[in-house]
Length: 322
Ligand SMILES: Cc1cc2nc3c(=O)[nH]c(=O)nc-3n(C[C@H](O)[C@H](O)[C@H](O)COP(=O)(O)OP(=O)(O)OC[C@H]3O[C@@H](n4cnc5c(N)ncnc54)[C@H](O)[C@@H]3O)c2cc1C
Picture 1 (cartoon, rainbow, N blue to C red):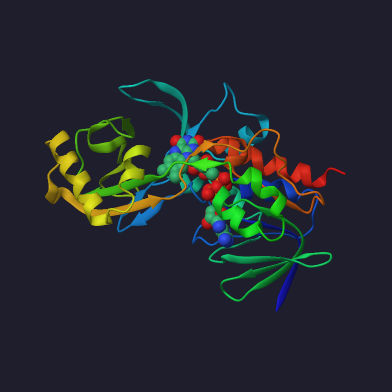
Picture 2 (picture 1 turned 120 degrees about the vertical axis):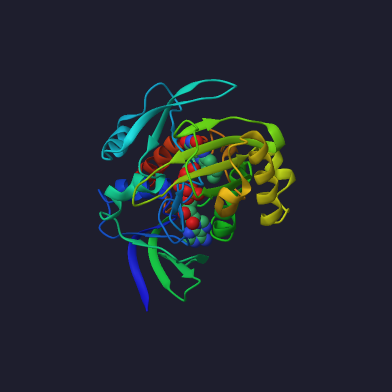
């Protein structure tokens, strides 16, 4: 069966969600499809045993002195967003916000207003005379007059290469860093500052987030280790076990209170597209000539969650321009 919608959005990361919230004002039938298990894309929390790790973006950065009104409203709808000071041996950045109990909950209040199909990967977009046909890995086919693609730039380029090749010359200029995150769950708590970030370049580690929740979401304490862009790029093909062992040996040396047998959960996640290092040129068009295909995502505006949010709203306005 073919499902027909007015606007189909590929990706339920923050740019896809903000595009959908904006588009709902103008289109009757808006559908988001996403290949992941949960909405949020790179803003995500992973549950392993009794631990919950923020292994993607750990906090919201302010890209300017104050957030724009739309984004403020979006995050003000969440009661658990708190200002936070990042402790660092490099700089002190007090303009970040933590989301409690975890980053995934950033979206909770918005999701039930939207029509979202998760676990659905788009394989091909085919242009017909008056509409697009979207073929997915689970056999589903959708028909839509307009499409917005919010996947990271290389994946977006792959999806639209046959239907809008003229947009590729810009999209291919966007760049991302790679990042490896290692998650450790402990069988006890340690005397370390709670919810703290430490920057430490030893052995390629660029930040350590220690959390000590005792809630239904997370028991005992945990550590999210983020490897630097450079280290991640160089060691991307190392096995997960090798990376975890590398981190365990550094952590047990750095904090001699933590012993290897305190570690009861381990996980390694490799982000092929982590943070934007080069965005789309500012003169690049984010919609095609016919204004029925648009692209959004952090890579169209800048490297932060706020940029990704703004890009979703912007692409809807561009599609509506006559
Ligand atoms: C480790 C890490 C740390 C970060 N730290 C910070 C930080 O401290 N502060 C900050 O502001 N930002 C940070 N970021 C960046 C921030 O997470 C991103 O800028 C933002 O989440 C991007 O949102 P997006 O919607 O543009 O893309 P994404 O979140 O990547 O969403 C794209 C969605 O498209 C889906 N998709 C892709 N291809 C297909 C397909 N073929 N079919 C269906 N669905 C598809 C994906 O499943 C995904 O859900 C970090 C990112 C990472 C990975």
